[in-house]
Image (cartoon, rainbow, N blue to C red):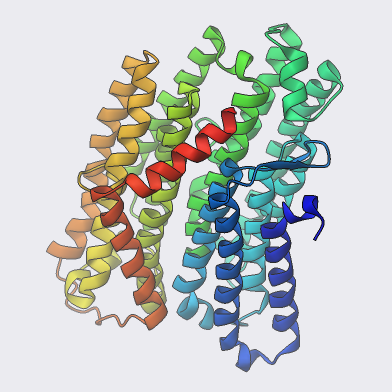
Length: 479
């Protein structure tokens, strides 16, 4: 293989796997599609092996004069996206079986969304980034509206389509300003040609790009899409949106803001505005989660607050801050997927996503209740779980840059989140649910539950392996 094309090995592998899965779903009878899950899992594992080999062999190169980059930063996120896709596929086997048509393209769309995320993570050019973004979001438009007989799912898909198009237009408008100012869309060229320019046009371009990315990661006040779309989407897709698409937004946003626009993004006035945005996101996201009765809506507001926590690493603007973004994004995949896998189990058994439906889950499925509790406490940042370590890295990086008030807000809001997470735990352990049946968990789902729980526990007690990977990836961004 040509040396340049070898840099694209993970993307090429996943594209081929996605096309194969899509073709198989079209060609085989509906009743014979159970074999698609092992085939999809195998394809993801092969792609993970290729991406992992690139990471550990320290592959660093560029394709088409810097339009696409293969570095440890991108490889880390590729592994994250693939891990999320794998957990979604494994956790959704029973859920997909009960879909009215059991369409074969469900798994292919998950893979194509992951491919778009991988392109976003490796983009060294704003046009390439936009192509990856659209591949991801178009796949999600279909997946969110996948429950054809469910009005909420169709409504969520339409809202996501309209608001996604608006946010993409805002992002492209900012890109057009940057191109007009520099004559280039390559991120490193933009940085070189802008220098420390803080002209009104540059500030406008920065704000437009920031607004476009803020929608993708659901920072307040660009969060309005998340609750309705999370509630209407199929439960596994809600999980995928919450972890993978948010991580993809951060992967692109961190590279653009800290490589292409660092002098502007970390300028005093702009940094203060970003800090206010992050503070409002943490406060409002947590406070609005408290009164929610629907589990997916509660997790939507939780994910908004989590975006605020992760964004503090961007505001820090240092390798330690990026390390925190990388580490927390990865452990968030496992904690969030653990919680949503339990929600998928309950939704499949009872056809509802209300928090009250978790009543008596400790008796009906002890493993599911334990995983839910550990996952939620990890997201709250309770030691000795992985979420505590991730928040420690993020808050320390921000504290080192002197943002003491924002760190204080982040700490207080983390404690507030314990309240609404424990409301779910109380429902599972202290409410009877005597009229509700016991819940059986299939082999693939049980495997997913165990993996998410063990990883969350292990990385809380011994975070060094992932921390070292995150350090290597962060340094490659600043080399």
